[in-house]
Length: 439
Ligand SMILES: CC(C)(COP(=O)(O)OP(=O)(O)OC[C@H]1O[C@@H](n2cnc3c(N)ncnc32)[C@H](O)[C@@H]1OP(=O)(O)O)[C@@H](O)C(=O)NCCC(=O)NCCS
Image (cartoon, rainbow, N blue to C red; front, side, top):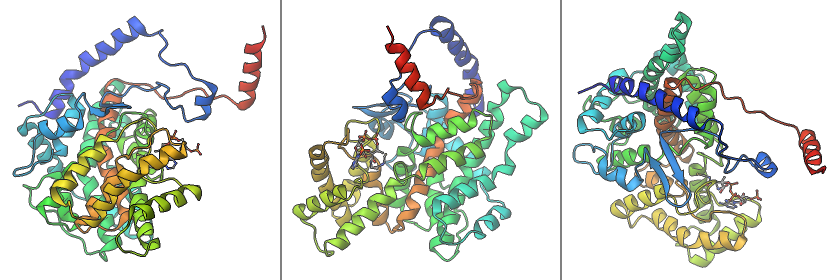
């Protein structure tokens, strides 16, 4: 069986040749035009990046290397006795484009488990932070604290050819992914369990199972949820804030640790990955405001309108690209129906699905009234006892590393250049528009 690195290495020359030939045949063709509105509007819809690991269709949702979420759940290798796909297999698919065998996924599991272990100084760095520091800030600091171990930096200093940088970038990505659950679990246990840390579990545990173990959740069902969660949040093509940040920062040949920390900081915004904490906070506030009993549809509708009229968004709904219910939401809904159909919070989430889209349509602002991934994830975690909603984005961040670091390895393999779009001023736009209007 070829190793992961050998498999990638064999694909690099053909991929470089493909890129050369696309540029030679089509390099001067125009894909996107940019309106002034788009320039001020976050470049929505402007095709301005190349990302191979996944692509997002507004109607159908995400495909990872061409495979939909239902296909991933069916086709990727599973843990023994489990039904959900292993993130190890997804990582193999994202990096190589090939569906992994059970042996391929297991080889990655062994590699990640072999590479795990936080240096003591990283723990001391985290311990120095006030306990009230948001878990996402702690997580980003933990990632940066690991950065002195970067092989890419060492090789660069030794004078490695630019075309070979993908190799130490892959090593950094593997070491980093192996240790992300450790940083995250350390943050969780110091923040919410009085620093009562748990050592890693037995070597046979998969990456997600060991993560669940270090967080302190031993139910096999929670490990199943972790596998699904860590697969679903991994990648959402290249233009979302976290993926774009990793790509952008990496384009300066900044190493994977620094690039990922930037992505995590972007993910920490409430319009992006922090929305999962906001969903739970909002549901909790709604229950409290409505007296805590069983909620009626009319009460929920009224609360939704109050949220909107106070100028806030309904968290977990809407999307910059999607125009349908997010298939990641549907996968989690399916998990909920199979494992916890009677859970009270799950039933509230189901009620919101029946109510919120119509309200957002009536309000007439959101282009997409349907739920996104964040609308469902929190209540699944709460069901198993992971109730601290400020920690939820960290789980998203652990998962998002899989997609963004896979892309980063390919950015270096294809020797993509520094990203440097041209910016203009409003004054420039005015005079340009007046000039273009002159007959
Ligand atoms: C995801 C999100 C940031 C996309 O933003 P976007 O691409 O600008 O979305 P739209 O083009 O549909 O926004 C148009 C308007 O509808 C509003 N809108 C979008 N989603 C909304 C929601 N869930 N609740 C209320 N208003 C919403 C926007 O705030 C915007 O209002 P404005 O013109 O006053 O600024 C947005 O839908 C949102 O804020 N959702 C809630 C947060 C969330 O769930 N984030 C997780 C994303 S995976």
